[in-house]
Length: 460
Ligand code: AMP
Ligand code: ZN
Image 1 (cartoon, rainbow, N blue to C red):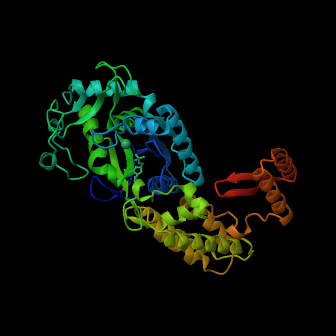
Image 2 (cartoon, rainbow, N blue to C red):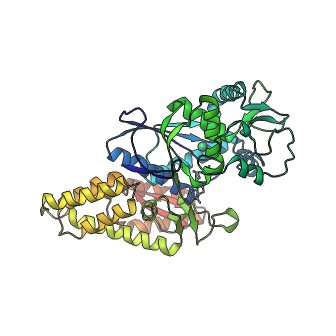
Image 3 (cartoon, protein in one colour):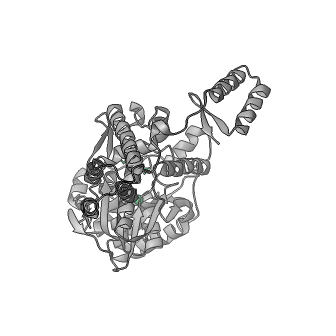
């Protein structure tokens, strides 16, 4: 199979570094200071597709994903406040509670979107000792130096800076801001460890006094710890290329002398209404918000699969409506195939199998592979087609064996009437009556769940 490698700027044939059947892969994980928006989740759907295609090709995977629960500043460089501390103030909680809450929601979104969890999920705050050792190593090798407010990486010592983005040292010099932090040797040097002022909430003892790690050192430390000095694949969003991943490479090469990953693979961004997603524009939708508007997580996954991971994907509610309709049509067609005992000739099935395999093996051309599925579903109804579609679904992860939306659960009208009665009792704060009806409904096999907009009835 071929994969586009940001490092070589071309599609390269994929093989593992050690020739084994296990792919060692590191994925930059979330900063758990807020709900993941649909853009963030697009990047993890891409990670998941890569994992699924590798598995389809017969590989095992040792995947590692970090949870950034300290050290990611509001500016990707060294400025601003720690995102966790900002969230803690906003929500009047401590950063550990913030991390726990948003990590939980993030993992629930993974489940809803059929995103396979990496084999190792590691929190930055549980690896502080390892990070300190890494920073010490960089100091010993002459790449790290101390200033009044932290330990910095001396980029001028690393001649190959810019391998991924093409941002050379010369470009950095030209673009560097006049720095207030005059302890730095070069304005573009970045912090690998920050000294913590007293009032800073998250801090640990270190050889340089109380402090906390820089965001970039977290990924370098944890990827090395679990995958070794070099591994097969490193993934992230395209925004990570010019700073975060360049700095990871600088750190790894500084310490070990080698670029940590053979393949650097990046997913492009999601836009909303043709522009950037941002809190101030109110367009950073979450999966839960889409669900409340009537779009299932699977319909959103289907939406993502229609664009190649290296292309920008523009989210609008019109295109999302289209994805929802297509996904429903897909399930309806599949059901017809499932119910037909007719046979399909082996040669016909083989043709589709080959086309599908060629597409997914060509730098994850999932949109084209979906095209193969749609063409195949136009064949005369046959359970053989259904079974092959389920085989393709090992890659798509679209729950193609699910019942079509319109057939999901039919709630009898008398049950709906009882739930309405219960709601009315709740409104009047008549809790005893409401609880009695809830118990009665439970006994009949139904649960009523309260939502923002009212309630839903589900089978128990
Ligand atoms: P963060 O939690 O901010 O560290 O981001 C988590 C992941 O989401 C990173 O891999 C980012 O590259 C990615 N990301 C952030 N914004 C977008 C977006 N609009 N579209 C796609 N991916 C994004
Ligand atoms: Zn990272």
